[in-house]
Image (spheres, rainbow, N blue to C red):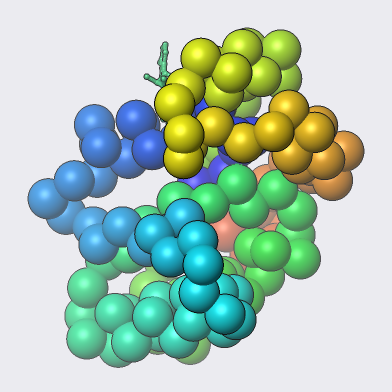
Length: 132
Ligand SMILES: Nc1ncnc2c1ncn2[C@@H]1O[C@H](COP(=O)(O)OP(=O)(O)O)[C@@H](O)[C@H]1O
Ligand SMILES: [Mg+2]
């Protein structure tokens, strides 16, 4: 998944991938150490066990997405980016309307927007879907 905080990623996952995919997200362990390493290990283990996996994070730039593309390649499975292309103002408003702990400070949404690069097939995705 790709999209700002409040863009609608988790809602989309619940609607479309529940029942077929294991949902992995660093948000599931906000206080853990080395969350990135832990997430990558978990994704690799699930793929090795033959499960389909969805990574429900903001994944705003190629740097965050590259290890996930690599994990899919290593497991020999196709990899897709689903970009929730929600206008930043709407993501900000939806984030504000949420309750803790899902709500993040607005500066967090703006920081993600500042780093954001749309996902592209050139990164190694077999498919890029844009949800508006
Ligand atoms: N398609 C949609 N239309 C309107 N509101 C939505 C839509 N998808 C999600 N929302 C609402 O927006 C907020 C953020 O959605 P969420 O799925 O938690 O976003 P994310 O996982 O990207 O942070 C929630 O309050 C959710 O109910
Ligand atoms: Mg979410």
